Length: 465
Image 1 (cartoon, rainbow, N blue to C red):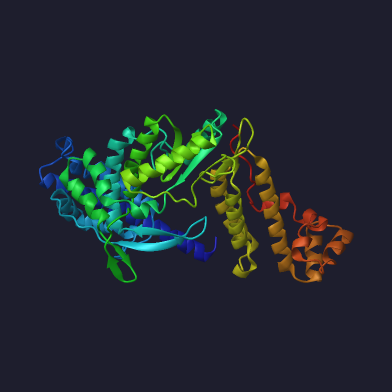
Image 2 (tube, rainbow, N blue to C red):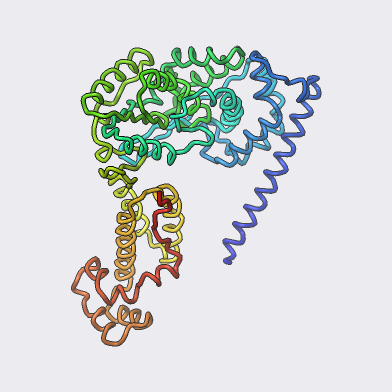
C-alpha cells in the first residue's frame, strides 16, 4: 500500500473514532436533558397529541443521526458537513430539543443545486442543513411508522420493504394477465409544484400535534437559497430532504385511493404511475379522467409530452420495458442502455490519463451497482452485447496508448502471440483503432480471460424468473 493510501486510511480511521465518541456524547447529553426535564422513556407514552415527544425519543434520535451520517450528502447553506454534526449536537442538542418541544424551532433555508437528469435536462435539488436533515429524519421515521400501513399496497416508492424491482414485477404480472395497454402518467415537475395548503390539509387529518404541524409547515416555507439570495417557497417539497418522500406519498395517496375505488390495476413509484388496461380506448378514458382528477383535487399537472397510452413494450417504467410475447419478459429499456454506454465512454476516455488499472477499478465500481439493478432483466442478449462492446472499447483504448508499431509488436508478443500474429497486428496501424480493436490478434491478446484477470465484471442477468 502506498504512503498516500496509508495516510488516507489513518485519517478515515481517526475520523471514525472521533465520530463514534461524538455519538456517545450526543446520547449522554440527550439522556441528561431528559432527566433534568423529569422525562424518561416510560413517561413518553405517546398519544395523538404527543408526536413530538415520540420524535424526540432517544432511540429514534440516535437512529436518525446514524442514518444522516450514513447518507452523507453535501453541506447546506451554513457549510456544516455530516462529519461535524455529532460534535455540534453534543453541545446544542438540549437547546434544539427545547425549541422543538415548545414549537419554536426555525429551520434554515434550503440550498438549491442543479444536477443533470439521466434522461436529459437538469433536476433541481434542495439541500437542507445537516441539522435540519437530522430533525427531518427523526420526524420521517415516526411518520413512516404511523402512516405506512395506511398506504396502498401498489405504492412502492420510498417505503420500507418495497422496491423498484417489486414495482416492475407487479407491472409484469398485469401485462401477463392480459392487460396489454398501459396508461403512462408523468407528473410535471411534481416535487416543485406540490400545493402547500392541500398537502398540509392531508397532514392535519393524520396529525393532531400542533407543534409537528407547525414544524412541517416551517420546513415547507423555509425558503430556497440561490444566487446569494433566499427566495420564498410558496409551493413544492424540495428533493433532497428526508421528509419530502413521505409527504409526497401522503399527497399521492389520494390518487392511489381513486384508482383503487375505480377497480383499476396500477403501480406507482413516487410520481411515476402506470395504469394497465385491456384496450386503447379504455386507456384514453382513464388518461382523460385521471388528468382532470389530478388537476381538480391536487392541483397537479400531467406532463402531456411524456405521458401516453401505449403498449407496455413501447413504454418504459423505472428503466425497464417488456417483450411483446404472451408471457412478457423484463428487458432493459433502450434509453437505459444508451446511458450506460455514455458513462462507459466517459470513464474510458484517453483525456483523463488514468492507468488501465484505475479505469478497470472505476468500471468495476460503477458496473456492479448498475448490474445490481439492471441485472433484474430476463433478456441476456443486451447484456452480452454490452459486455462485448465494453471489451472492444478497452481494446481500442489500449491500442491507442501503445501508439507505435514497435511497441505494439512488443506488447503483443509479451501477451503470448506468435511472431507472425504480432506482426499482423502491429503492421495494421493504418486501420483505425476501432477497427483494430475487433481484429483477431487483439482478440487473442486482450482476451476475455485477460480482462477477467484485471477484475472487469461479467454482465449477466441475476434473475431467471
